[in-house]
Length: 117
Image (tube, rainbow, N blue to C red; front, side):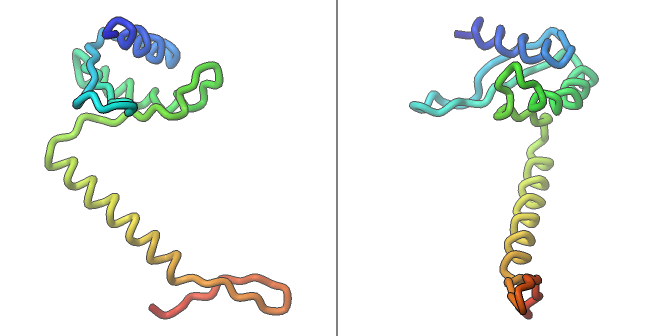
């Protein structure tokens, strides 16, 4: 199974024009029916940065089914917490904006009206 995983990751990296030497392993416990994340370790941070930049091309490759592949950088616990707070704030602001707007139809025209909240 590890060989199959290595082959899949190698194929994915080659599809974006990279062929670095990497170590691959699954993360977490084996729950039933859930795909676990894959941890890819590179020899240097420069290679990792190149892979992160080129990984954006994955969703554009129609030949392969990489639309559900997400590549995230390695983050320290502090960076993870900062990102978690930022994502939470963005979601809160987005929800707030949705609640503040309401649709108002006047004489066949639809316009967005700001409500006071």
